[in-house]
Image 1 (cartoon, rainbow, N blue to C red):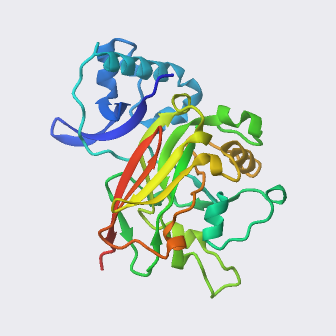
Image 2 (cartoon, rainbow, N blue to C red):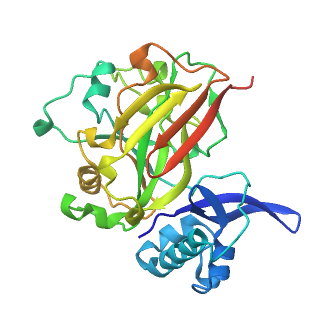
Length: 313
């Protein structure tokens, strides 16, 4: 399948601003309905209003994906000429469950001072981020007033298309719809507690509003190739902080899906943030402050950028 992405972008129609389904070709956004109509590759009535609707019926999405791919080919070849849309990008879709895999790169665990058991004696460590932490590219990450150690974490996000329980690692990729970029923003000083016998509080440190920028768009599974060979990068104010490959995961994508589905039934639209490599602020003793600009990138997908602002009083 030739590369294309699916985005949500802001458009004004009849004086009212709303979100439209975007077809991404060569990192340019075109209106998906206009593209399919102009390319005459299918019935635009079959296109969903948004990616969330498409994910809910992912097992029947073949015709829609085929139309979008064909429309993209027509744009690339010059057979179809459409205006590039410059409306603000929204979140590609709104996941209701965000599973996040902690300490899934050996060097990252080392920089955090985390002692891991031998891989053969352990399983993935997964927590949940609140769905309300999601925000789009080019929006603000709000720094809570009670943290002094705001940190970044670029990660590959895997999006489930076919639900299931007790999925084997061998069959895991059949359940993936596609991928996007996520920045697992973390308040490091709020993930630790001393008032309870439990030392970590992942919920408090990672689920503030705006602590999960995602985007810039969704890339279908078959457009990306091997997701275990992708370069991830993150810069702060233009300075490189993280630069590594997904091949460094301790537990790969298939193993994470196998583990999660042994506990619960995965659903279409579930998102898995698969872990971050070395280079976070905690390891450097450097943290985010208002005015900083983060750019998180995954090759084959794209980049998201978010600036930091102080919480209003």
